[in-house]
Figure 1 (cartoon, rainbow over the protein chains, first blue to last red):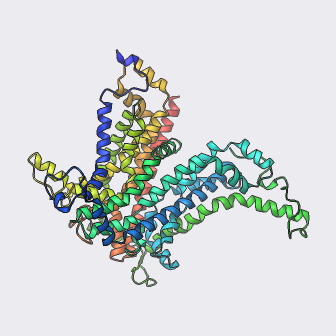
Figure 2: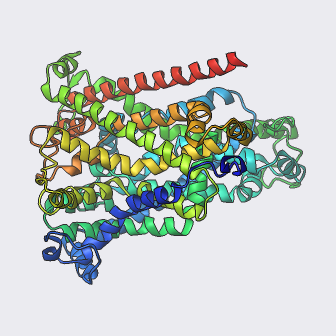
Figure 3: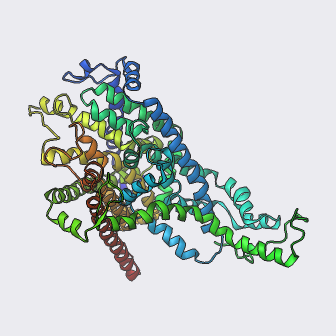
Length: 279
Length: 334
């Protein structure tokens, strides 16, 4: 009767490891494929059965990507866009999160509810006026048009508010007030240092999301000034038969988020799971 | 918890004794100024969010409603004509619109349901004392961190007609290769597989977090009564996860209403944004894009956007009712 002696943490049956390994393989295979195909030549890839092991042509195909589309500029643009969005999200979301968690002010409840409600509004639905707006401001085809609309998000505000509630005890703020700190200095010198782990998680999630964003950059930027995702779509649209070229670009565009994930996967997972319990 | 000290305004006077250049202001006035400034600080902290949302979220959405009542060409700005509800009545008699509605809902069902069921099973299996726990969790999340553009490109290769992996596998078991893009159903199967692949692990982690919040005693008691692992999933885990499931279902459905990148890039005919020759996988979002940014019909495109918004609101209301209903049931049983 092993069922009785089993610890409560070991509820799933004997097939759990095979099942999980299968899940791992299914999850990893397309990513592997993204890197394997461009390591071969088009001749090798065009055979049946297709090759399953990597070859030695990756850098050759990667170099072709830079010759075909403006990929260097695309990488730089994506870095600027994702970096700026991350920085402004961290600053503004932690400030708003701090205010909603620790300060009393008129309209507090209604305003917080408004923030939460805006999470349900898909930005896509306003995309036509948004485009007109950017044209009006003369920002069409400039990176600022991609950065500004997502410079601070409702998700970030709610996430940081939860973090402040957990990580910044009232006693700490009271002590700061005793020392003569005003509200702004409390936020900057007392709350922010305590929020570092939460800021790291939000920063990682924001960076990856900004890096991967596609529809809006596609609309507002042209192919002379693309982000990585826009450049990839150009590559794929024009050269679909050239699989090693297209997937070499895809591999290069995926590499930065893979590196971030490899380094900080644990924090990213904890961020998603914490957000789930609180949300 | 909010600080209940006499409001941020009434800070004890800061140690700075002499305000440079401010000495001529009477003491009382200075403290009033400081109080007003202090009371404004919280609003200053939250202002960036509301400013950005007003400018790039709320205003565009409302303005979409106005544009949808006009005839407006992207190439001739300022040359707009009020046409009342004509864009909406045109939609109702547009075959491509109804096709896009059908495709959107079919894809929604074909990707959301398997995705959430698989995620529940995966979470249940992950919710155990495992060796290499972090490895497995990172593994299942891996698809979610890759961009949709990347996913679509690599899946399009895997589902390629001639040299795709799937066609080769079919050939190995004696079946003919399939032109995945061409078929009504095959194209939808390929596209839903991309969505399922990218989101199952993410949802599994959310379910896992919710499962870990269920008190262990419930499972112990059930095990004592001889309930096996799958019966525990059915009778304990699922009821406790009801709000979480409703939440993930809502997020997934809202995401599916906006499905755009997959159908755009799965189409390999150069320059096509019609979701295949027969519009067989054109979604509402893709139709919106085609009408607005390819055919330059901003008014018509805006009408599509508002239809999508209304559908979103209906689903959000449904999810709200489901979770509220659940809360009432639980409350009543206590």
